[in-house]
Amino acid sequence: MNKNKITQTSCANTLPILIIGIGNTYRGDDAVGLVIAQHLKKQVPDYVSVIEESGNGVAFMESWKDADTVILIDAVHSGTKPGTIHRFNASAHPLPSKFFRYSTHTFGVAEIIELARTLNQLPSHLIVYGIEGKRFEAGIGISPEVNKAVQEVVNRLRQDIHSFLKIS
Image (tube, rainbow, N blue to C red; front, top):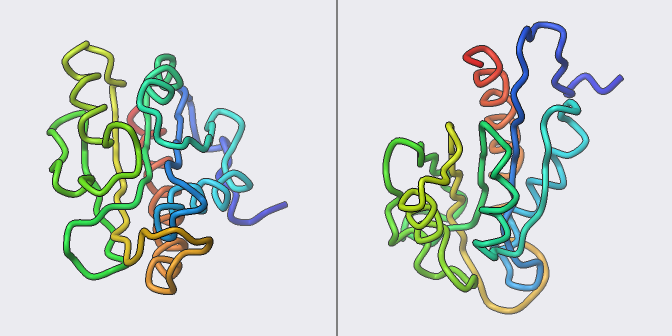
């Protein structure tokens, strides 16, 4: 048994939780959301879904329509130190759009969330993790600074899942 796997033994109620890793494998640190999703897939129980998205906002709005709790993970570029982990409660407050301004996606994550808010299509709980990237140019592999943040974000996500199970 994987000792890191989150179990349901202490959970009375389990509403669907969806984790979406966003990114592009071929754009350096932009891949960090995908890398974290791949790490997390082996550690979550059946009632937690982990998917990978390229950043098509309509696709992830469609994917979260049946989830009570959604956690998005994406690379950001806000000017802080590479590898810095930002966590936002997007169901309560708009995201700072400057964090996602260098998105390689059609629309940035902040714009998609605000569109969903306007259309009354936000999940009950929406958490967004942004990991400060160092390089976003073409190329495979994330920087050492961003790679160092991966395990910390996985640990925080495990704590978030436990917290959401307690309040559901």
